[in-house]
Amino acid sequence: MRIKVSVALLLAVVAFFYSCRKQTVQEEPYIQTPISLAIPPYFPKMKIPEDNPMTKERLALGRKLYYDPILSNNGKSCSSCHYQENGFTINTMVGGIPVLPHVNLGWSKNFLWKGEKHYTLEEMMLYEVNEFFATDLNKINADEEYKKLFKQAFGVNSISSKEIAYSLAQFFRSLISGNSKFDKYRRREVAFTSEEQRGMEIFFTEKGDCFHCHGIMLFTDNLFHNNGLDSTFTYSKGRYDFTGLAADIGLYKTPTLRNAALRKNFMHDGRFKTLEEVIEFYNSGVQQQSPNIDPLMVLPQKEFGLQLTEQDKYDLLQFLKALTDTTFTNNPEFSKPH
Image (cartoon, rainbow, N blue to C red):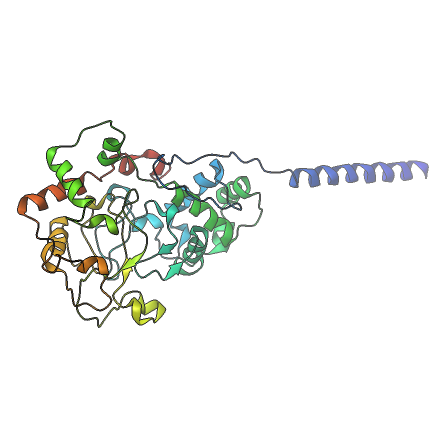
């Protein structure tokens, strides 16, 4: 009888210690590796949310998800419409609309051409996961590799939309373009040609008036303007389609001009196919009677356009080409992980 009691007691003690050990393993805190983004010193300060600090684990996970069609149910991933070699956009239209590039979005709070999404980057990624991609959480939770990676990155056993969105936001923040010839010129590492120098002067002075909306250093103000593309609006009325405010008719988001020379579709409807066409539009094609046209487009002495000479237009083009960042388009840290 005593032997039976002793055996039972021994088994109970073993079970107790095993249970405690198992519980200890489960509650062991996950270890994060803090990192800092390589932000050019002359760029604006980037705000990093307190609840999503940059870590090696989350960034690597976001990069993997960016290229993985597991995000969707139709075989598409973020990279399906955002090619690194094109500056993280695609040179074909999607749904009749040019695809805005994934570059320097860590400084943006307005997303898409009409600003339909006025979000933090984390909130925008939640929209992408829940609505745009409609990610199948059961499918991703059944993937053993992802279960391990999310455990390492967030310390969770069950993957939710939030963790997916937060990891994607980290990779998006890392997509910083700031090493073009212009940047190297600014750092006094290279010299501009005479054409690039003259083009820069046109860009940053009233002669070209480009800098008002495409200011240094992001080359976008991340705001909305009516740049006089049309005098009337029927199919699309710009930001008005989202806000319903008459003052927003014809307003669209200012795209960055960084890596613009790599693109094949310009303006919100892709009506121009080359930078030469864009320059000529601002030189002679602005519809000054357009409703809500930005006051910058109708400044005194601009009634007949910029009136640039052929040499001026060529010089401006050379400066725009100097905004191409081949370091960005070839950076292996941004490419599909192996």
